Picture 1: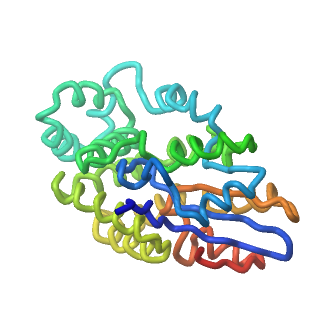
Picture 2: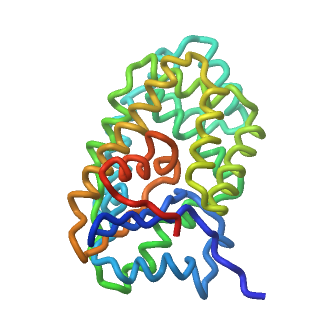
Picture 3: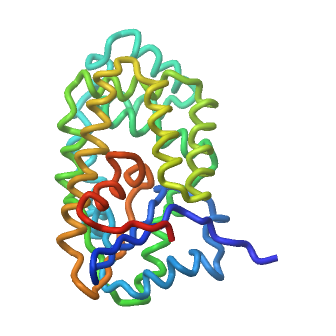
Length: 281
């Protein structure tokens, strides 16, 4: 029996003769998500073939240098994390990484926002998902054959500001949320997000993410301000940029993290506010 590709959240937004295809991505994945003979569903492949432009969160050029910028803005010249965190939070983090002394040494030089992202990455890898099977990498493999143009919806400095602009209190809240649950519970959450993404309903993903956020919040006001900075402000920038790129009879294929799509402040709702008719595809 032929293995079917993951469904994935995929939507068509139209306003007159302007079309924007929107695909919700996962930055990690499983080989089974992308069968070699047909890595994406036919409507997704047809939309890719019809689009002169593929828009990702970051352009491939920015993606290549992103690691340098992450290091520049997220890593201190000497150990800074233990003194940037309240002692109980630092002890909890050290306890979490006790089985990985190399990671503990590495994380000591990180600012809290980058430490939080590293913990999340470990949880994704523990769930058996791999970065090489992230949607963006697989999309580019397919799209490069069309000789279309690949652009970024935000600049690398803009993406970095979403994290470097967080106050110390927000950064601490972000890291604390990653340590509320056991590693096993975090892995179960990663697998649940992967399952929801495979099913392909952006609003179900948004509802799950909001419930999770409320459950993990140590300080609800701080937690909401982090979501605003990392998700909602960027959603507005994404939509402004994708509408600017789109032109009549020249479809744009947009691929951004699945958590950005659904819900009242998501990209799909913002497109509807701008007069687009948005349909699940």
